[in-house]
Every structure is written in structure tokens, then in C-alpha cells.
Image (cartoon, rainbow, N blue to C red; front, side, top):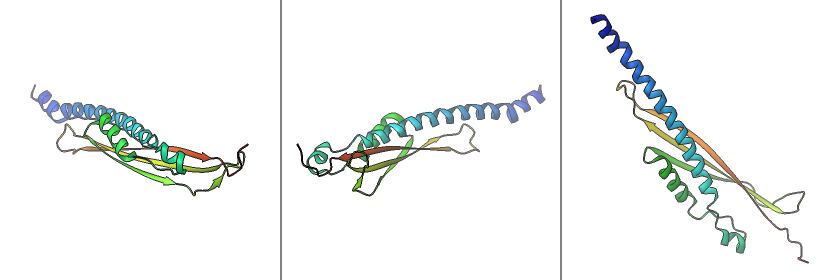
Length: 145
């Protein structure tokens, strides 16, 4: 009995805790991936339509704020979020249509934390990234018929 109790304390319970930790980490990874992808899409959907229609200006109104809100709603306060806008050179022309094309890639990064059940292990940090690619085009300066 004493040998069995010693085995449970030294090997059995830590293995059980590690198994629970692995499933909690995987659950956090899935939630973090979904939250990061949703936040990145929310950023891309924040284009100021009026500025685009009137001045051909590609400006994201409250893009980061909208993305942060979506991320926080999906994951709660157990993670951090960041996003970066990457713009291509303006004025490229699509050969097939003759339209001026600008591509904007939004890269988003999310990090989540899971507290370990075994105090000696420390906390687990999980990170995920996602990107949303947007392509905007305007008519070339041909006269309208």
C-alpha cells in the first residue's frame, strides 16, 4: 500500500495533471486561432467606405479598436492582441482590366496564457497569427461613355 501511495504521489498525479494541462492548452490554441482570425477579419472590414468613394482614400476607421473588441469578446481577458497594416505600392495597374490596384495585408498576432496545474512547470504561452488580404481597385482615368 505504501508503495502504491508513493507511486500515485510521485508519478500518477503529475501525469494526470499534465494530461489535463495538455487538453487545456489545445483548447486555448483553438480558441486563440479563432479569435485572432475573427479579429483580423474585423480589422479588414473596417474600411471607411465614404472616404474610399469620395477621395479613393484607403483608410480603416477604428480598425484596430474593432479588431481588439472582437478578440476580447471571443477570448476574454486571457490574451493579448496586435495587428499591423502592410500596404503595397499604390498605383499598380491590373493588366487585364486597366484598373489601378492597391493591396493591403493585415497581419494579426494573438497570444494566450494558460496556468499550469503543476506549480513547478509555470504557465503556458500560446501564440497564433492570421492575415487578411484586401484588394482595392479604382477605374482608370478613361472618360465615361
